[in-house]
Length: 383
Picture 1 (cartoon, rainbow, N blue to C red):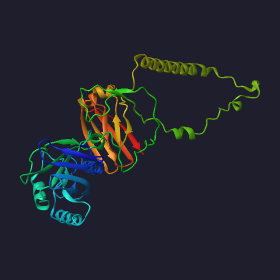
Picture 2: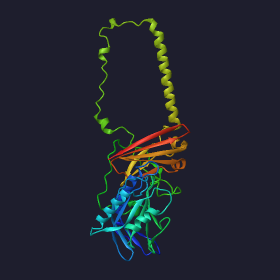
Picture 3: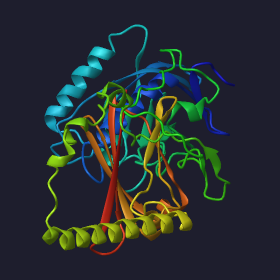
Picture 4: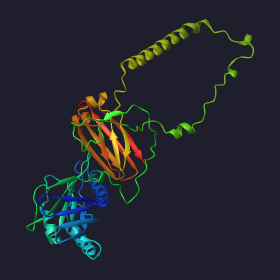
């Protein structure tokens, strides 16, 4: 049964029902992605305490959470040092004094190898969450598609091993596409530094992450941001007409006659200029005849869709078709995450979904065409 403002996680045949607030999904996803971008390649894990209510019948409602930072003395995984254990215990004791909600479980993001809860997770859960209704939440973040999450619960006093029994996309619009976020009004379309350029829409998939490659592409209108700022054009000073009156002598009889020695050099210069202009005109006509575009451009564009940003490129551009691989780097405040893209991902999918944390995001795409040849293109989004 749908509950407004919550996603209900239930496994057929299992006596458990976990309800997680969509507001919690929104905020927790941002914390997970922020940690994911803190360390190149793999990303750092984050974790903490789930807060809510639990009933004896197997129903758990998650309404809040508490992020518990650690010092990462044992690497990027969420593994507690002795100092981290003291901080975790202190936070847990404080949270248990609350009356409205209380600790009902534990969560962390998962960027390490393997699947499922680790030995350290089970030891932590056994020590601090002995209640039978305790749940655990693991969230796997990705650079080019929504995070995937799954719950664990106790059966015969033990948590399941291996992957969760049911996984779900950890993104509000995928869990409740028809429900508006009640916490704040929908954000306005950001003012880009550069205005949109009018161009024919391309047939591209709406969302690379949840769709399969077999689905037909849908036309999507893009917002290119490589045009010069409109305010710079409007505020520029008008060009004054060239003053030529002073260049004409008042008395024709005073005009100096050119020396005959200049005629041949001047003729040669004009001949070279004519050849250069003719070559340039022929090149332009050839490009127009072939209908080609800049072979070094991938038309990298970014636009906002709800709370997400959609990064797109022209998968038919010569650079994309010739690229062996690519690296997409997203810089969002302190967050900086490079993601490898194979030739198939570059040519078959052309939309990357990203939820911004700050009001200024930079997307930098590097394409490797040959072993020692590469090209790059960068776009920015500002709110």
